[in-house]
Image (cartoon, rainbow, N blue to C red; front, side, top):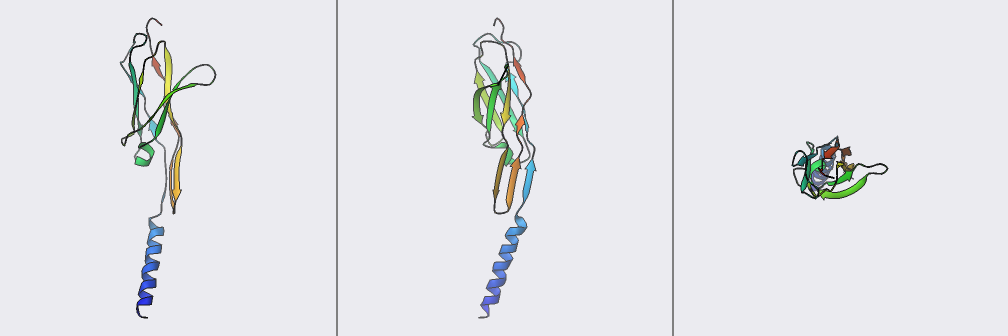
Length: 135
């Protein structure tokens, strides 16, 4: 019977400790976009569009779906999607036949369980112009 108060105290301490480590965060990642080669390319040549999700939280960087869109009149066209690596990096290999403006986008992401709430805002990169000569 003398052990019962010790057990109750231990269980209570564990319950309060789990509440104490519960946390919430909201992060605003930043999506970069680059292309190679720099400058004009010929129709059908390989163009690499790449970038990174910048965030101090790995939850906001790793294993994120990044979508590549082409800007056009009306709804923009989804060209491809990629999943980021642990550093938040993504890459697209394209073979454009004409000039185009492209951008990347990530959706908001959240995860909530057991007093933890992790939230990352959506983001959109700036437009990147792909100059195709002779198009």
